[in-house]
Image (cartoon, rainbow, N blue to C red; front, side):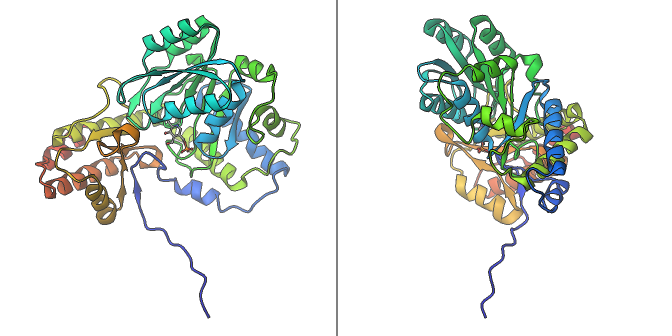
Length: 391
Ligand code: PLP
């Protein structure tokens, strides 16, 4: 008799661009019995999720929920609901994900101006300002807070001011920043902000926190043509998430449990303490990499603590190094994406994966593998520099 195959995944240390390791309490929450999606007990935890999301995102926006699907569903929900055919959109692009927003805005029928910045720099504020002026009557400005493809962070406030001054709405991608880097939606003055569960929130991929300011919501309600997406039409979704509880789709029950537990963990730790933990571990890793003799890719002053891009030294084989890290040490780091393919490694320290042990282990393991590849990595110097940052 043949046995049905089962899958026992190997133990990994997830230090790539996402997913990050999920907290054991989150994984346990997902094994709880399934409730009906309109069961009063399930509706209660949906409401609690929304309340906790408001706290974690720094907002009092009524429209704060999580869409079913990964971070891209949050992006698509925000873009498809806010952009109508013929409306003008300006997207600041400094990496792979900004381009994805621009493509979506075009699919929504928007007239899109792209403002490019080098991959490794923050979004070009002056360029976006000029494009908004030149286009006139811009409906939406879009930026990525934490560009996972480059490791660069863009300060949001100046873009929020620009949007306000020009009568536009500001969309901010916080997929990689929420729960690891300060995201303060109301203090920024951002209008549409979305994230994902699998990065600094440390839950599996599968849901996308999303919030909309009253102005953004007015724009959604004032649409002249229905949203191009039925599944992510927020006017329909709202009726499921608010007190009407109108059936829209069957909520991904176990993912809502996971999100609920992940948000509770963020609040137990304290959002500021969590930012501080990510900051400390990320900077320690970066000092270690530099002490090893490697070059960080993103512009100094704009480097994300949760995702570090480091240049692959000449003569070193990208695939062999990442393969050795994975196969010998169980450590996953990411390769370069888009323009940076084969040029950088992307090392994440997000959520549960952001801890001192991972910083030291990854530096030691990477340094020793690089030495085998002929690069004279100062492993001792790297570990000492990182340890000093972690003290
Ligand atoms: N935006 C950014 C900045 C991201 O890093 C990612 C994923 O890595 C996404 C959007 C898309 O999220 P997902 O892959 O969860 O759909």
